[in-house]
Picture 1 (tube, one colour):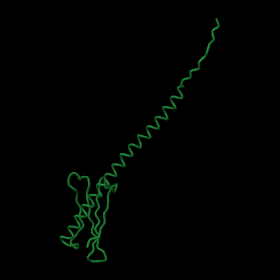
Picture 2 (tube, one colour):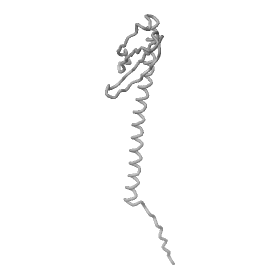
Picture 3 (tube, one colour):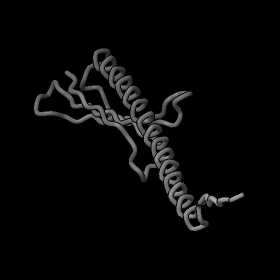
Picture 4 (tube, rainbow, N blue to C red):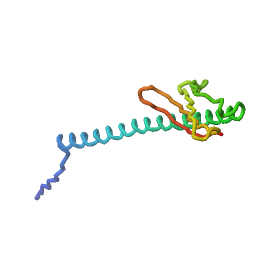
Length: 128
């Protein structure tokens, strides 16, 4: 009886190959987590910008109604805050004379966050 030996070569991964693969996966996961955190930050900023723009438009509409009620010349600079749930935001209204006596330039600024960061939205209109 003649027996033949067949050698089957089974090759596994070396420890170095596994470590390189884990390093690549770790770097990829770190990049994905960083992108996720950045996405959350961008979404938060966009939400503040959208809300501040809507609040500024509301305040501008109130200024226009006030100008119709008391007259454009009676408008004055003012500041204040919003009621709940918008207590994180504050507003400023600046009135500037124009060369035309019956026309005023009104700028409504809605701010939020730290004053040092200058986070805000401006809406400007001309009232007559």
